[in-house]
Length: 219
Image 1: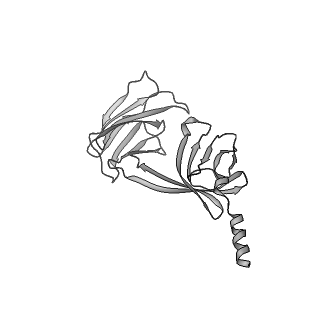
Image 2: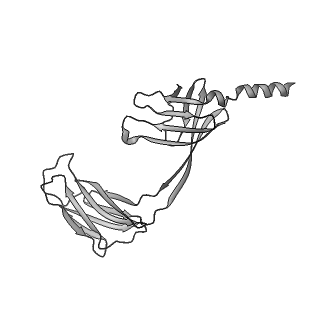
Image 3: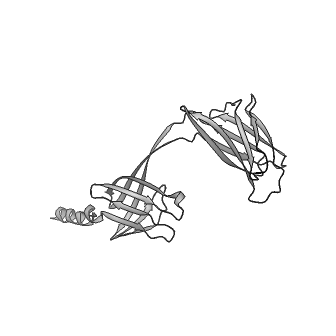
């Protein structure tokens, strides 16, 4: 009899997936995120922050684990093919030294670079790297303010596809390290987003990409 009562109590405490299914919206003045839990065990999460540049959708499977809602979020993406590190010296110079290397730290020679000013009246500078992967540029002789910057443009190929890049360079940078990854790997990862279930609300308690502590109301 005791075992039967415990079993019934356990079944009562387990959330009913059919009642949980539906669409939820985040309670946040700066976001309109929605989570649709489908009856077939799939879900769609739509990130809708205050800037459309940050909008992102992802989907996957959802399940009830230990009385909590868990979203299984499997992602696949390619490694970055280029990265830039800027360095400011304690004593600024009137030159910008650009070093171009591969991801395994080998210099790339004869690599064309274009440095442009924010002032369109000033001619851009075009140089190629030497055998050590280094190219030198003169800093633009303009009146700077806190918003002034330059741009560094370059092209390279990855898997037979040409990539054009135009990166913002801050006005006080004295040297720039540009790293190119010609053989990017495919990265696979599985994230979990865990929600506490409170009647018609969900509370995000653990996530690697969403803001924890947020509440979601059922629509």
